[in-house]
Image (cartoon, rainbow, N blue to C red):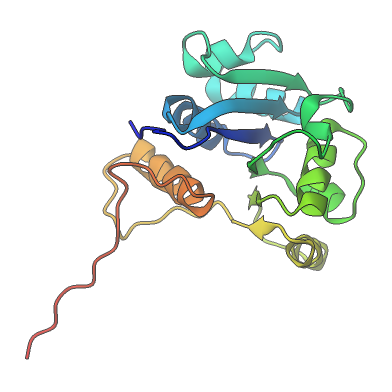
Length: 208
C-alpha cells in the first residue's frame, strides 16, 4: 500500500448518489481506506444512493452501511448524514483535500451545477467549488439530453471535473473487478493519489 511518509494525510469526501454503479463506490471506498496517504474519509450517501447500494450490492441499513460496504469496521471512514447540512464538510473551514461523487446522478449534477445546496452532498460540493478544492463528478447516464450537457458545462465552468463512468479495455481486463479498479485508479490519480499496480499505457515501439 502507498505510504504517507512525512506528508500530511489527506481528507477526502466521497459521495454516493442514485445513479447505477454501486460497485464503483464500494471499490473507491476500499481503496481510500487502504491508502496510507489518506487520513480521513467522509462518506455521504443520499437516500437514492442507499437504495442503489441495497439493489445492486444486496446491502441494507443506513447506520451500518460503511461496515457492510467494507466487510469490516472502518479505520478512517466517517458516515455523514445527507440531511445534516451542518456537518463538518459543509464548512469551508474544514480541511477537505478533494471530493468525489461516485456515481453522480443527473439530479445531483443539476443541484451542484446550479448551486442548490439543500442537502449535505450538494453543500459539500458547493464548498469545494467556492474554495477551489478539487471536485470530481463521476456522472453516469446515457443517452444525454441537452439539460444534462448544459449542467455538465455549468459545473465544469464553476471548477468541477466531469469524469464520466466509462470502462476502459486497452488494459485487457479479465474481470468486472478489473474494469472497476482501473476506473477507480484513474480517478484517484486525478486527485493526486496514484495507485500501485495501476495500468500505465506504453506505446509500442515502432520499427525503423
